[in-house]
Image 1 (cartoon, rainbow, N blue to C red):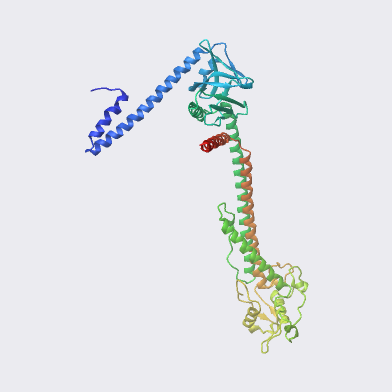
Image 2: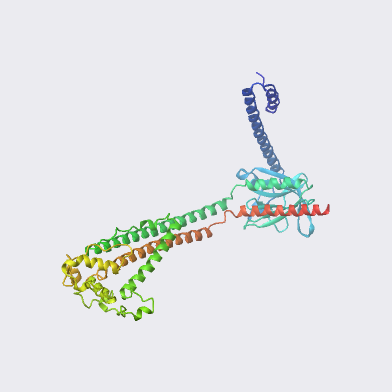
Length: 485
């Protein structure tokens, strides 16, 4: 058994791969082994570099003057703070720090895992350097690194956008080719910088407040949708009672409609829009038909020649008993009033008995005459009770003679069906409007909550803006170089 250093393993495996071309399985195994060895070498190199940086950090710590300090966020930053919080050395380099009035100071820039500061060497000892009227320690949180425009420029801008200590520093490296190394190293440290404790506490409190607001909005919207469902159920129940009222009068009502699907949270917007258009159109037509039949204007005169014909009869103004609100003659049934209107609005054809003079055996003829003069939109007349001496008799005759008869039963059959349909479409619109209002209020509350939330992504936006500016500066420099050539 022969042992070798890890760095020698690739040199041993690569010749074996070349000599095993005939054996595909062995060659694939050796290639996998070579890839794994390279991964191990990369990890070993990283650990060695980390150990060297740790040793260098201790060396810097030992060389700093014990009496030297600077200020960070209003507190003293001493050499002992370098070892606190598991801080690790990320980058170091010598550069010139630009100060006021064109002065430059050679400093050692130290970049730790969360802070950046400057050291000045004097007699093989380090001391903290504080720029004029600026902080000596810069937090890496919200730190922007921007290169100075110009191909031969050696300048780097460090911009701290932290509201606690906003500062800007200008550094000049020794060689232009070193500028990108500095920028990449500092940006990598900023990218991997741990979150500030104060910021994390503030962010956690803001997140808790935001979650509490979102939960409250969710609960309130849930209550609103529950009320919408309850309203839909009440309208379904009301519609069912109206249909039962028609059935008690001897009519054949349609099946009760359902409104619960209209207040669903996941309702289709296009389908809801179609429902609204259909309901509005039907309501307009039904309201028009109710008005014309109620005022005895169902038959309009379309030509001047009809005024001169013998068949033309001037429209009669409606009596109070024929409206929805009054009952001057409660002994007359609704269909008898309708029969009078039909007989007075047009002349009776020859050989056809009048509606009021029908005999008890002519009930079928009455129904056929009524169907000819009042064609229904959506349903036909059911069986009609027999007529005796011009009076309509039914099993519930007390309903037509009682003074407190419901207004729905006082209408003609066509008007009753039209009123039921009108109620249905109005209830449909009510449910749709309630659902849309609830959705709108939910979205407005969510938008207001998000607008009031924290700006946790502000740094990412600033970083992207900084990269855009760097690309623009590079493009400008390349254009200038191209124009000079």
